Length: 136
Image (cartoon, rainbow, N blue to C red; front, side, top):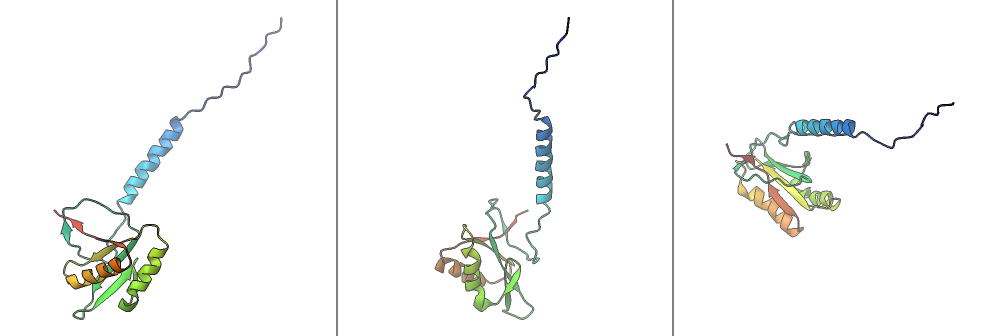
């Protein structure tokens, strides 16, 4: 009498190793996202109790210089002359679906610099968001 082995193929897949990988990646990205430094220009941002965050597409920074009433403008950490600020900002946001930029400026910078950037946003139908640091 010949004994036959049953050779059946089981169509099963173990998801336990996949979930381990997903959780490891999740923890990795959560930990590394805290290392991102938004203040690359070392600005002393004003304090705010607002906890909302916005998508950061373009960052416009205003940094005071040593000379009185002299400011350097940056678009995504690239220095831009004041005369070319609006056209460069328009070109940068033309590639973006979100027409939003974040304004980062020192808390001692005069309001007229903020108003200048807000006027650029209004003329071009952009959304402008003021960057702040949390109150302690």
